[in-house]
Length: 138
Image (cartoon, rainbow, N blue to C red; front, side):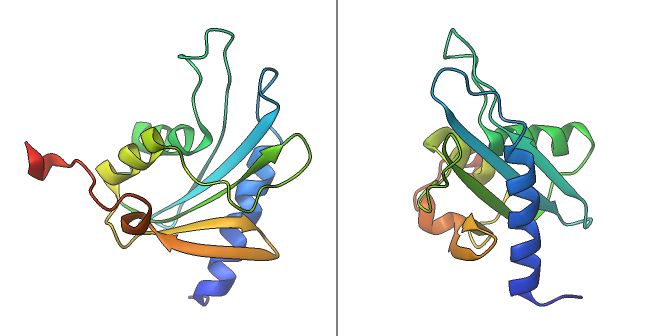
């Protein structure tokens, strides 16, 4: 198995590649995500905007929903990259809704890799969403 740094860089490269498919004619903010399932399969996603705004779907949720629709329910890590048009914002983090969706399927210790393939910042889901609402709250 590869070391974490190599794995994280590989995930970020997949997220960067997914970003090219973003449909963001309204905000111009393009995001890509790559989610590593416990099976070893990588699920990618991009943001898909809509003129009605509410139907817009973020890259992270696209990746999660794709994975779940294919039977994957446990995840090792997710990489997220994004920014306005051709730039990349090193602080592009999952929105609150995406953090909540990730909390449904990921452990609080799940790495969330941000940035670019050459500049990675790794946080945990628990750091991004310290008081997640989970099934334990029901």
